[in-house]
Image 1 (cartoon, rainbow, N blue to C red):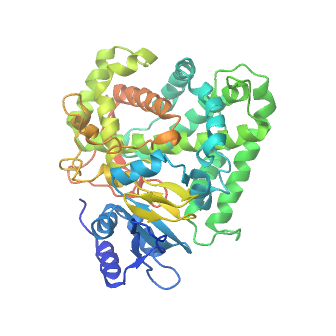
Image 2: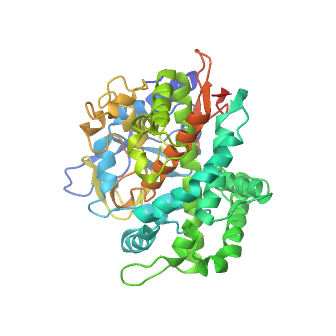
Image 3: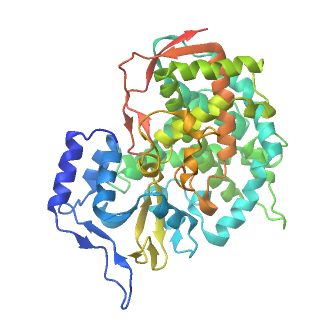
Length: 469
């Protein structure tokens, strides 16, 4: 478990001094237990405390909650009571959602609804299934092969543009590369000067969800998010008619032409909403995964050599679809990096009916934060959980098999990430080319800190010494 900072210790000390209260009254005759928690500070509750923990290392405060209240606890945040769901059993209960009591849409809408309305992650039940069946046509084996064919030369251009030096920013470079790939592979377009504006729009829309002032005040985080959304809408709307008539091998065109088994297709509005959400998801989560992989490969050069040796043994400058299984070291490093730095640490839900989680009564209309990242770092599940050890996922160990939700970076249940295979393909295709061209390193005592306030990114941008091979 990471060492507690002064902020962590203060937050925990304050919480221990506050009186515990149940989230709600139990129904008459119920044998369930109430969800326990504390109200926090006047007016703001736990809002500032939780955000402060996320700026640093949230595991310490989450561990306190788990040890103090159990797998389900509540806190007063952003003007309302929320529950935290911690540990694999509790995560499984919510994500499998067998009694259909938890909904994604209202859970995520509070945070990102104005910026990503009706994205696939914000749809529920029959409507979600309907949209997912149509969208699945854009992620078939054949489609993935086609995306890789488009992706490889674009990766080569982007990786060749890296500028070696003692302070190469991995985060900025990977973010630019994934944006270029997302627009070229997803949209079928190579951007010029508008790339910077599109990148800014993505950043603003993602960060807006944690704004304190949650209405359109000029210059505020919420306002910038709304403006970013308008930029993205205009970008896709201007290209929609052309894409409907095209036969290109990109995701935008695939969604325009996708049909369910019974012949249903997406409306123009559906396509715009789904493209904005998918482009954001692919752009940010892939950036985070590759940045954390580069960090651990710099800290553990023996794994960088092992991964490079496999890429060299492949004998190809660019991977083909059938080659992906021939890079096992990259696969192990990717899984371990996603365990230690989950690209999406928290998942939002809202109860639409009274339900229970691990024997605790959870009433209707309860905002819920599911935290798979906590399970990833539990010593009850993972020996020496803070140590980078990709062999955990090797066939002879498979520590992730201790529980179905011990490792869940892509979520679970019907809302499990639809693009998980595309993500693995993209990560391996990029890092294969990077390994063949470069080596990178950091000082032995270097440690970066990840900021978890939205999605986890290294606070310093991850500067490394990048050298051509």
